[in-house]
Structure formats: C-alpha cells, structure tokens
Image 1 (tube, rainbow, N blue to C red):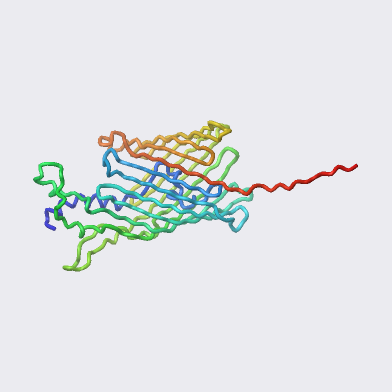
Image 2 (image 1 turned 60 degrees about the horizontal axis):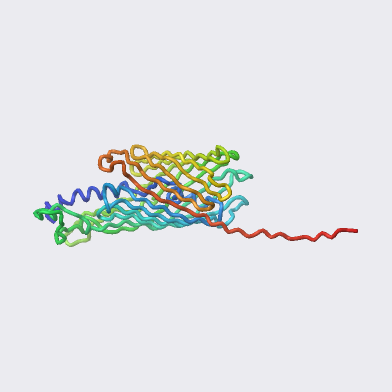
Length: 356
C-alpha cells in the first residue's frame, strides 16, 4: 500500500476506531428489554414464562441504508422455588445484533443468564435480586464496503472503481470473538397498595474480552499480522423506577437510567403513564415522554392487553447533528408476552345428608 492509499484510508480507520471504543447497544424503551438492562431482571414477573423482543433503527436520515439497526429477542422464566418459601430462581436467554455503517460493523451476542430473588420480609413485599449472564459475543465488518478517494478520482461520476487494488487486510481483521460476562443487582419494594419502586445496578462486559479489529501489519516481512490488544470497556448501568397508582384508572411511572462506558455517559429520564381503558377486557393505554440528555426527546405510546404489552418510541434529535437530521433520530418497536399456565384448582365435593 502506498502513502496515498494509506492517507485515503485514515478517515475510515478513525471512524472505525471511534465505533469500536464507544458503541454499545442502547434503547429508549430500555424497560422493554430487561436482560440488556440488568441480568437481575430475569424471571422478575408473575407468570410461567415471558417472551419478547425490541427493534431499533437509528440515523436513517443521515446514513440512509447504512443506518444503525439493533434487533434483540429474549425469553425468561421463574423455574423453581429457592431455599426459602418466598424465594425463587429465574433463567433466561437473550440474543441481539447491532449493525451500522457502510462497512457493516456488527456486534452480535447470545447469552444465558440466571437470577435469584431473595425475599427480605415475611410478606414478600421487598426483594433483592442477584443476576448474571454468560455468553459469546463477536464483532465483524465487511472490508469490501470501504470506499477510498482513488476509487472516484478521474471517473467523472459517482461510480466507484471496484477493481481498485487497496490492501485493506493488513489494516483490519474482519471478525473477532470473545467471552462476555454480565452481572447485576436490583432492589424492589411495595410500599403500600398504591406505590412501589425498584432500583438497580449492573455491569456489562466484566471479563473485558479482546474485541479490537484494527491491526498494524506484520512486524517482520512475511510474518503474522499484529492483532489488536484492545479490550471492550465495561459498561455500568444504574436504573430506578417509581410506580404510583393515582386512582383506579390512572398510573404514572417516573423512570431514569444512567450508564457509562469508556468515558461516554448516557442519562435518560422518563415519565410513563397508564390509563385503564377497559377493565373488563383488561386493556390499558400507555403514553409518555423521555429525554436523553443533550441528544433527543422520545415520545412513547403503547398498550397492554391482558398478558401482551407493545410499545412504540421515536427519538426527536436535538443534538449538534440537527442540521443534518432535521429532528429525525431513532425508531423503536417493542413487545413482550407473559405466558401463564396454572394447574386448575381441584375442588372436592361433599354431599350433605340431612338428619331426621
């Protein structure tokens, strides 16, 4: 590779390096993705099993077909009673993939998790939960998607010279795998018949697996390529939610999340309301507004029908990218369903014979 080609590649490498250092999955409807929020959320519901998913598409207005896309699916269940009568154990499985950019930079992971829910009082109104996840993660890219200055030079159009001989292989590996470990803790308490709260902390990428794709070429002619020793930074997540039943129809839930990763911080505050539209059919309408500091507002709407919950959110961008985005940001669609399978009650009939 000559000097001109190397200089042409530098912007690509710079953007790639920035993504590798700071990018990790995040959702505006974070409570609709419990296992990517905190492993202690595994099995934290009343029912037999829960299945769900969330899909996020971001920066379509800037990147076109190369936008950020993040689908995630999960399933979890409370499986057995714990050491004490009111304790229980939950297990879950989560899968996600996050893809962005013309190089198709993709972060994929599949993780298996478990949690233990420990009752702190006899009534079972206060719990502390410990959870952990273990799995395999990978990052990959498509070097053939790279575009360099020389490919457009003297072409007289926007067509790119696909036959351009650019030695991109010595600048980047196209895939890397690592072991990923996450852990978390959540405290939940029911204060009275109308109020309850939860607060939690989680850490992701505890093992700090090697995830670097950028390489530096061979140290000796014809020798092996020098691979990156970059480790994926740990991501810390703190969350809190307070649920208030205002009356028989209306509920409000102020919520916050703070997460930090490699010096990049994210703070979101939300207020979500629920209105019992039809008590007989168990239909609740959901609506609210969230704010990601220095980045975006996101209105949210949704509905709960018996055991099915759906949600929709849209990020209205107000950051420094606004001249390019024109207030357009990210779109999210989420849903989950709680399966309830209970043994029917066995009622033994008794025949009463009157005495004469």
